[in-house]
Image (cartoon, rainbow, N blue to C red):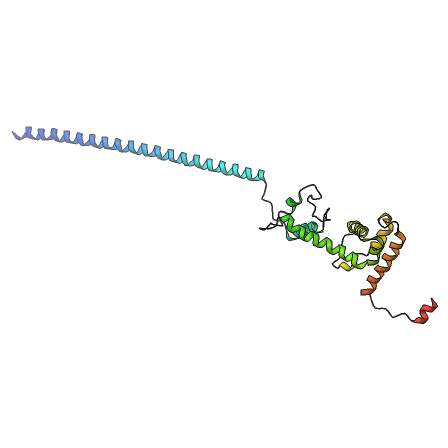
Amino acid sequence: MPPAPKAAGKSKAAKVRSAKIRALKTARLRESMAKSGRSGGEKAKTRNAGISESENSTTSAKRISTKLLKAGKPKAKPSLARTQKLFATAVMRRLTRGDKTDRIWSDGRRTADVIAPIIKPNDRLSALDRLEIYNRQYWFRLLDILASDFPGLRAILGARKFHRLSIAYLDAHPSQSFTLRDLGQFLVAFLKTNRALSAPHTALAIDMARFEWAQVIAFDGAALPPVKLDEVAST
């Protein structure tokens, strides 16, 4: 019978150890759950921060897009046709006093600003200086053609008066042909309607211009049979 108390003592000790183990497991479980909760909270915060950053990025993108739309689309480069037209207009503009390129465009802008997109300066000349070379060459060539085709008219009027007549004529009838042969085709009619430019020798000037223009036409016109002497006598 003596062994019975010993077994009871062992049972109590086992119960104590079992209770301690359960308590330890419970403590560890709670600690683990606490850590998991903190981790979950941090993850939630990170997700919220990510969403906030995404929203901020979207808002910034929208603002940038709005600014771009307000600013307008970038200006397209001028086409070749527009560039050629602008250059031709600049070159063919009438020279001013002293045979200079007009510094003011037809709409009031500075000529230098108008031609800046198509003519660049170099280390010696500005864009306007470079344009002036072509502008002068163009006008000098036209004036030379009129003087060459109408030398008799120039002699009647004198060099200065003929120059003024030529400028006024070219203002009214700029070159419209690929060949300068046709440049003086309206001069006779122009003299008739602008008599002050040839006064006091208007009648003589008109006759001379008509004769000299006929020579221009005959020079490169179609070949015709030569006139016979008897035909001349009969007229």
